[in-house]
Amino acid sequence: MTGTQTTHKEALRTPVMVKGDSPAAVAHARDVARACVEDLDPAAAPQTAETLALVVSELTTNAVRHGGGHYTLELGVTAEEVTVAVSDLDPAPPRERTPDLSGGTGGFGWPMVRRLTSEVAIIPGPGRGKTIRVRLPR
Image 1 (tube, helix red, strand yellow):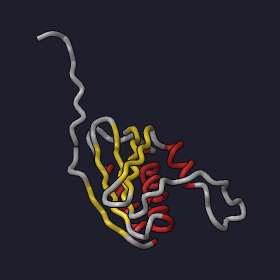
Image 2 (tube, rainbow, N blue to C red; image 1 turned 135 degrees about the horizontal axis):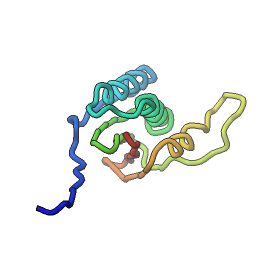
Image 3 (tube, one colour; image 1 turned 60 degrees about the horizontal axis):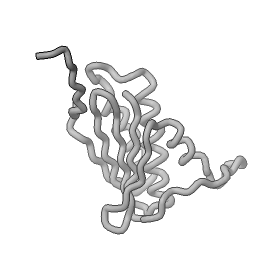
Image 4 (cartoon, one colour; image 1 turned 90 degrees about the vertical axis):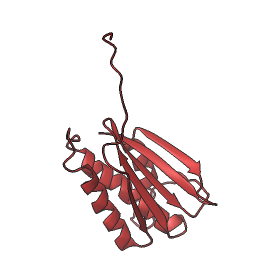
């Protein structure tokens, strides 16, 4: 055998799936996301759990507010990254808008998600909806 090393992106944990349809469900999704990266071996970077919770919170909140009220969250962990996929009922992609600095209508979440993640994909489906898949380094 030569000195060639192969990198594997095998899942370290079984993917976690959560469904929700309310602000209380968003809080639960955040808690599940934090728990998903706790006690990993090797450990995730110290900021990963909080960044992951923030990204999950923004994506699931947007799904409840703008994506038809229901979402499915799927979390996956490999040696290199954490993958978040949030599916909702609305086929329209998120849109950039001017943030409301008076605190009334938001506008901060989507740009924040894009800044905090290493990759963002908007995928049609399931059904007539969409899935937003993002990746964060571990």
